Image (cartoon, rainbow, N blue to C red; front, side):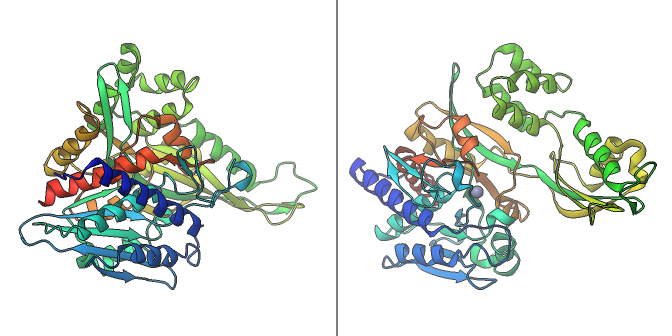
Amino acid sequence: MLDADVTTLDRLGEQTTELLQLLIRNACVNDGTPDSGDETRSADLLADHLQGVGLDFVTHAPLPRRASLVARIEGTDPQAPTVCLMGHTDVVPVSPAGWQRDPFGGELVDGEVWGRGAIDMLNLTASMAVATRHLAATGWKPRGTLIYFAVADEEAGGHFGAEWLADNAYDDIKADYVLTESGGLAMRTPTGTHVTVTVAEKGIAWRRIRVRGTPGHGSMPFGTDNALVKAAEVVRRLHAYRPQARINDIWRAYAQAVDVDDDTRAALLDPARVYGACQAIAATSPGVARFAHACTHTTFSPNVVAGGVKTNVVPDTVDIDVDIRTLPGETAPDVADHLAAALGDMAATVEIVPIQDGLSSASPVTGELWDAVGRAVRRQYPDAGLVPRITAGGTDARFYRERGATAYGFGLYSPQVGPGDFASRFHGNDERVDVESLRMTTQLWLDVVTDLLG
Ligand SMILES: [Zn+2]
């Protein structure tokens, strides 16, 4: 365990705050196109921060201006585990009109840092760098190896970031234990404080549904075979489809810990009642309802439609792109079964083309990393228990889990950040984080890493 004094921890928290402000101002906005992001600016910034304390680091850029940075403190014992602190440097675009402050100003106002990435996840990326630098600067000689991995392109699926490095330079980033986004919320309940650890994520099965019709003159629509009218019915059926709910162990553990009345809890754990419970919760807490629904169902969200050529031409082709997120254990044939059930007699009349697939991934909720995280949390939230959660979105953790590593989404937030704040700020307006959470997260990494690596 780390024995840094309070003054040192305050100073490190201030360094994290300053580094976060600089990362926000770099505005490494990833809009999904290969020449967006420009994460090289933040890789350079982090290299500047890390230099001068004897750290080894390398950068990898699969495309110009898309650099990821890997720094390491080599362990003395090859048998000891390797821990990777992985933070992405890119952020998603903003709609500035919805913000009260400059989304790329990195302003510190009333104890909060404002800006895109403040909670997803430049806060963690900054705190991980500060912790790594501090350990190197103090001459720490661990048994196991520590890797700091500042990675590009997470927000567009990791193709030019974690996926690329895992495929092409895995020796540089290989680790037994990985800590990345997105957990560490403290839930205060009558049964005590529970801190969330993201141990799993849902799978991706994006599909394009192509609906065909027959072209004709838009001035005489009677009886025409209009692909858009049929597509509307496809969308309606997808929206109405109710797949069977499934309660897995991760959801069971999470639902046991949340602050709800006993009847609601029982409903959340009953496959026959959980949908109704989500409807009831939605009236007061729509974000919580959405999360509960996503954790217990495979979901179907028709999000893009393309088709038609001209206002006076009956369209003969319409494509509907559907964001499908699968529960643990579901594979492509299960997705095909869901779509057949949802579309009914229309299933035979459409073409379904895969856009992207990725299986759900999970890490165990026991073991060395779980225990070390629990000890580190209790240094700041005495008596707190850990509660596992699954995330409905995708993170870079899956590239490690696929290779056998244990990967958790973590961090640590002050009581000031509630579940509603946390959820709404991810990719939302007025994203911000309080400096106390930045200090707590910086200490957390120091405690976990020194505990595990000695
Ligand atoms: Zn993120």
